[in-house]
Image (cartoon, rainbow, N blue to C red):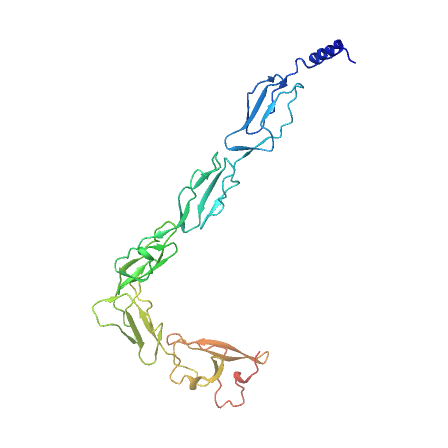
Length: 345
């Protein structure tokens, strides 16, 4: 049986042992506040943790009492940020973000051909809501295209309300006698306007000049305009050098200036030549002369190697140079072998 004196003495020893044991300043938790916040607390005093605005408490107690031991209990409280609703999809556009947590900001961008109808960014608020409504990516439209002077629309399909979408095209053509300078097709751009309009200008050409040894036909009118045509031809024994039909170009001149070239009289009486890959008798093939521009290959002998090779000759406006290596044999020299009959080198 413990005496009353011993019991009172034990109580005294306990009071001595615990006297002066205060709790220290509590741990600082991220995104949390302690009330009251002091450097020390007497046993029995209470503190309360509260999360900052925009954060919520998770996984622990918020209220603590300083015990007689002077040691605060282990605190497992965590303050985590509020999360705003998912906003990762924007039709015809894109959402750029890292997280949807407070206090992060997300941004919006539209695809080419669409514009942002609304805010370009949104911030997650303390309440876990976005500070603005999500935007909409609306299609870019262009108004009716202007029509250049002296031009007409040859291809254009507007939408309802006479608008066009990004990428739509309009094609123009000029009135007769007018030439187009610039692209005949314009496009609705991502900025809601059209690319540069072409220009239609009246174009006149001088009367075509009659070629020597030939003639030219053109429309019987006082003035010749853009795309008017002229037809050229030559007298007998002359060949047209250039296109037979020419056209008045957009630059006020003719697309070509043909001329009449003379045929070549052949000084050779007898020769077998290559013409367009075939062996022909020169005088039979060109009995009326060789037309300008025609080309043949004469056979020549290589006496050392006893073989033959060919050399080209072309008629140029009445003149043809017979290769020096070519030897024409008289019909009386029947014993001589013609170069065309000798094996090729």
